[in-house]
Length: 187
Image 1: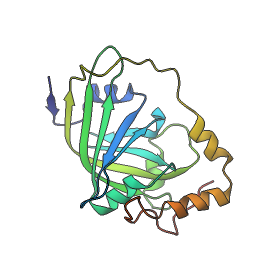
Image 2: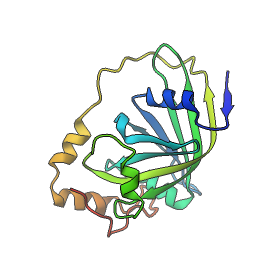
Image 3: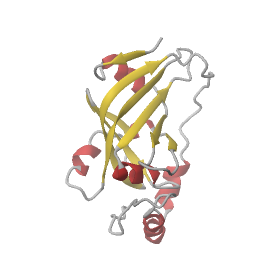
């Protein structure tokens, strides 16, 4: 039922590409809260090579992932099929946040589709373990469409709202450092 893989081969890449969403899990080194976040917009995730993936991190309700990565780098991604073919794929690794003003950022952007307003960073993960599971208990769901609400919100946000987003994302809910005050405001 469960299997471990040595690399992100073509079959795994096709499975990942076929999922409309994925989940990101991180945790602080000591105490604190575990963070588990759903991520949407298919064009915000990319397989860079057999052991490296990345996704665009959009401004949202908190900065837990970035704070936890700054703390210890540990991250797990989960792709879950809700279609008739059940499967769960987990990517375990070490991640880092790449800011829009970092030298690596423009090259990373070439791996993603449409430009999204509200991009906070790119999260790059060095994948150390790739494992799947059956997903036999996962219910069936049908995708209606991607939800445009976050893109619409960010497209209409003023520069002041973006600055406020950086201000409220300087600390995680557990008080860990998140964004630096000089984090760039895009748009």
